[in-house]
Length: 416
Image (cartoon, rainbow, N blue to C red; front, side, top):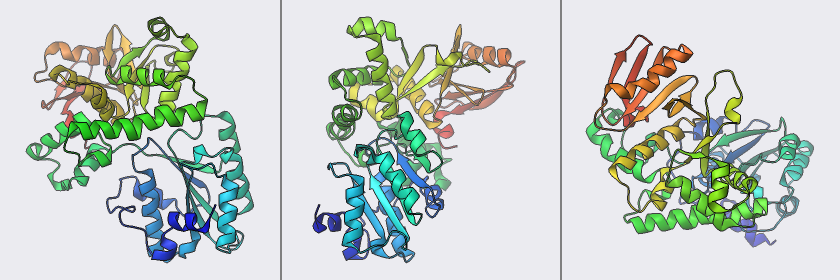
């Protein structure tokens, strides 16, 4: 490692500020919450998909600390994305180069893509325990806590923030739509249609062609994760099959995961299918929902439903989006907005159960009496007095013997 490498990664040591192209002016909604924890003792972990803005958040935090008067050389950034350097080597080289005493100085250490560093959790624990004045902020593009030993090693020392793709509210703010305009359907609906189709990867918002959009999502998100990150993390033998499973789920959002059926279809061992689905989930490419059973763990054993974590993944693989398929994309938006973990199927079926409340997506022009039946069945069975139906444009509250169903246009609910 050379001085020039660290100075390139930490250009504010020389330039007195963070490059504005890196510390972008737009702040995510989660930024203020992260900033509240910046001077607390524990390690901060920012985890999420590639290209959602984790590194940008780090640069924004560094920029804020500089403006507050923090000594520039007490802000150390290192990325493990394209290097085999070990954590101890990077820290000790920085310590020697800048003549720092880790016991005396308050130093902020930002470690990007830390999961790519071997034995990172033990090294981090060692420095955390030895040097109380070091504040660690780390990022990872896969769940950092998959391995049981990681949870045990850093227990009580780490606080995790999940960084998702942009919410619809953030998408509007990014596109200079003011909050006071959120109530005007004529202003919001065209933006919602774009968000519904192409999702929330911020760097794609300015793309003018489908070709550019799909090349970006494929090359910088999917291929990096499927062919590089996951194989390295899990010693994967067949990344092509991983991509096939992702494409299957992306083009069939809400599909049931039947390991036996998939095993026969692809002539793969059922355990392999299960492992590969796990890898996709832990790399934040898909979400899995279990069948709701009040007060029971049977949801863990039943078939799950799978959704891509952002509609950009659907747009990537779906060559033509038919009008009736937009309902599946609307359902995916709703699932991802509230990080849903449950659906319900018991004769009838409901898309989402959130905190015991049934939510059904009916993204269609007209709502008929049959559309209410699954919600009413659930409300009657579980003695729940409220349900939600998400629609294309219909809005009202309907009262039934079982309780009240609130009918809300999806675009409006996305802004709540």
